[in-house]
Length: 277
Length: 255
Image (cartoon, rainbow over all chains, first blue to last red; front, side, top):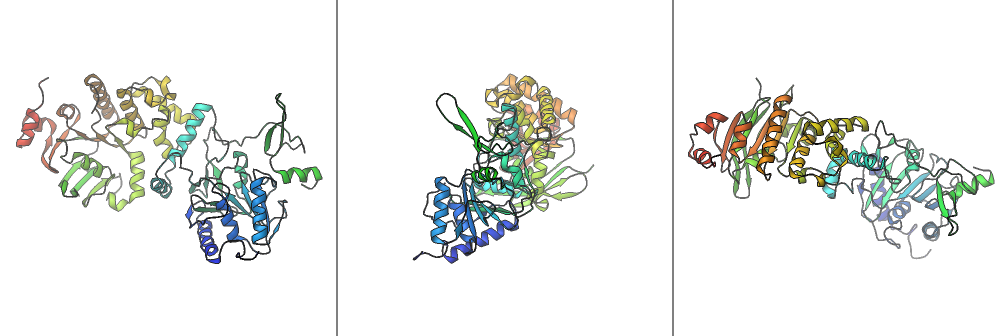
């Protein structure tokens, strides 16, 4: 496309973001500040993820964009066409074919490979955000590994609700050192973070933070010894493909209480139906 | 016997005000030391420096951790935080600022345990229930929010939340301030029985001579950032030498 640099951002900006990414990879789970740019979409729509993707994208890459597991939702369609126009890269909806996957709220059901990179869109990068209002104090807590208060929050959940009440964005400890927000993925997806073969990059546009989990890094969900972490999943089968091991979306079908469950990962669901999963 | 805590020539100013002026003191294990003086005499600043919350402009605080004697500055922030989380305690005057009011009583007591690495929900609850009983709060209130507690109960909850890690040294800043007289008496009774049974060393800041007489083994009197008199509690209070101490003792209302 004329008038734009490859993948929209200018080369200096991409270099700055790559430096932040390198630092983030070197210190797994640590939030690295970066000079986030204005992007042609509103904050909360993936400005962080889109900048990370722009910085790592090459002409040979094949891009897949997921929003809530689906490839055909507004956010996914618009970001995919954005890079198709500004970078001219090939796009796909197939998890297996993609080399870069930008995602919001989900990790694909299909196991990722070492030659793939997954980029998460992150609204709130600071896992201590609701416990410690001061950003400076929160950074000190990270520096000192002072994560007791986070455990207190889990204690409170169990005491009041009988279980940990967060169904998404369940805090994790990366490489036995940094507490990290996995972005608002369902707790069901947390085990996939652990020792994933693909490089995982996290971009928060409004908060201007980048963090990363290198391949095969330990990622442990916080829990108690006698109340182990349990990923939750609707107790049903997918109405379309019949899978009983995938994350399901609940859909209301009429106004008489009718509902059905279907795979949130549309690509995986289609692959099962086609017999290629 | 080696000193547990030793302050050497502490000096600290806030602008032109001298809060601490060449203050030195020694605290032995299991000893209760009271710091008395009027408002603005530097006693709270001294407590903050001793407990590692404030770095003095000159002088240092030596702490004997059972193996070595090293200053807080030399140990570094991380080590001092670890001490503060487990082997030391701090009881503030206002429990509302020290406790988490939107977290249940059990969670408040468990916080220091979890900060120290406790990860067994059942154990944490059992310990919290035991401590509630120790500080005379009905254990059925373990899941109640502190905001439903009375002032005296809040202070007892704070004491439980501090002592749960079995510290050897506790700093107290006016622990009975702002409470009515009968509640004060109960808290003092509780503190007195706990320190004797647990063998704690305590540095307690108070402006109440009565509190000092009841609890403390030794007493230091501060004025304008200096120690004007120090000695055994009974000795100082029954036979004050410095005119300021005489004034303090004389100004206590007869019971």
